Structures are given as C-alpha cells and as structure tokens.
Length: 285
Image 1 (tube, rainbow, N blue to C red):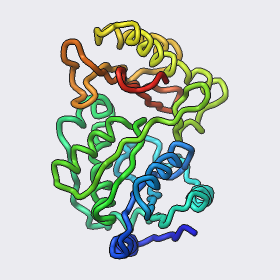
Image 2 (spheres, rainbow, N blue to C red; image 1 turned 135 degrees about the vertical axis):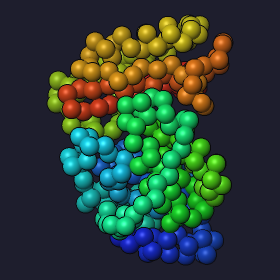
Image 3 (tube, rainbow, N blue to C red; image 1 turned 180 degrees about the vertical axis):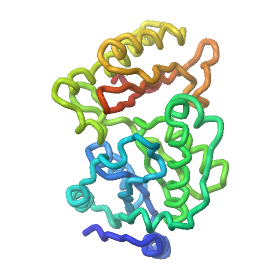
Image 4 (cartoon, one colour; image 1 turned 90 degrees about the vertical axis):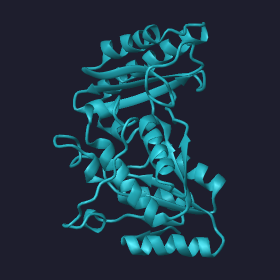
C-alpha cells in the first residue's frame, strides 16, 4: 500500500528511515498523469532499489506564461492506483505552497547544456526543472533517480547538475516507451484529437527516415537533420526545431561521429510534442 505524503519534512523522514533500515532509495520524479512510460521508470527503479519513492507535483516554475500549466492533466486517483499496483512505497504529492513559500527566492541554473534546443524556445523552463529537482534530491537524500529519455535534454541537464554540485544521486536515463505505431508515450498525447493523433506520426516518420539513412551509412548531420525534418514539417502546424547534435554536449557533432542525437519539437494546434533518437545507439523508433 503506497503511503501518500504531503509535507516535505515527512517525505525526507520516510527516505531517511528507509536508509536507516538498510534499504536503497529509488526516486521517480513525475508531474503525474502517469502512463506506461512512467510505470517503466518504476520498474527500472525496482530493479535497482528496494524502497521506491514517486513524486507527483505539477511544478509551476517550469511553465512560462501562456504554457499549459492550468490544463496540464491532473489524475491523482488513477495515478495513486497505478503506484499501488506496482508496489511504490511512498507517493510524495505536495501542494505548490509546500514547495514554494511566499518568501521563496532561490533558483538553480545549469548553463551551457541547457541553452540549445528546448532552451532556445523555453528559456525559463530548465531553471524551473533544476530548482524543483534540487529540492526533491535534497529531500530524498542519497538515492538513484529515474528519468525518461523522451525528455533527453532534461536528463542530460540533471545529470550535469548532480555531477557539478556533488549531489549523492545517481541519475539514470531510461528508454523511451512507444505505442505500437511508434508514437512516444506522453501525458500530453491525451490533448490530441483523432486526426491530430494520426498527424503526430509525422514525428515518428522523420526519426525513422534519419535512422534508416544512418543504418545505410549516412553520417552527414545536415543530411540526417533534413531527412528527419521533412515528414514533421509536412504533418505539424509549427516546428520549433529538428536538430542533429552530439548526444553528450548537445553541440555540433564531431566529424565522422559514432553517435548523433536527432531531437524534434513541434506543435499540433496547442499541443507541443517532443521526441528523439540517438543514432548509433537506440533501436529504430
């Protein structure tokens, strides 16, 4: 039975008690609206730890004005049921006021790797992510933390943060979970109409074109980027970026790269979808 905690101090104590009992803490930070992608993070945490703590918190700091904070899906009861079915020990679900007092004045910022891709279109986003995750890491204490690689840049930013600040946290990037037709699972998929759901497959088609070209020996980043972009541009209403970058630095790849990250962000109406594939590492989307 998953225990629901609302106060930060209670969550910290639960994790400290687990370690005192010689248990290893596995942390799964989420914003709720859980789907099979999130549940795969729980499964991975259970393979590496024996006390599983999942957080449910729609973090207002990572939403810019005009983004979908107010309509972001909140499905607490079904989320909790899913956690209980999968043996999560603790669910930390604070109210915003418990995380950010009226006097809150501190932020955490990671430079460099946060600036391209998402950083170019959502300039305040990663400061909100790194600030809330720092708080969650501080509350959980030494642990192993699971993040989905659909948010690839987020995983890299948080890994950099934990390394640079000597946090006693192992940050793990877990594989993207896809539907049968290849669309990456996302809480925002529920916003899509039936016709938009079909159009969303343009992002999968683009990643597959780049993947297939790589498999046939193509290594020129601009060619791979163009191949990925063509189906996305044809299906989506607006394109933020299609990029071919180094998977570690998110900068331009070196000559004759062994791996390239193809990352995409595009809009269908008011719904923004992201996806990616690491050529030379990942399976075909």
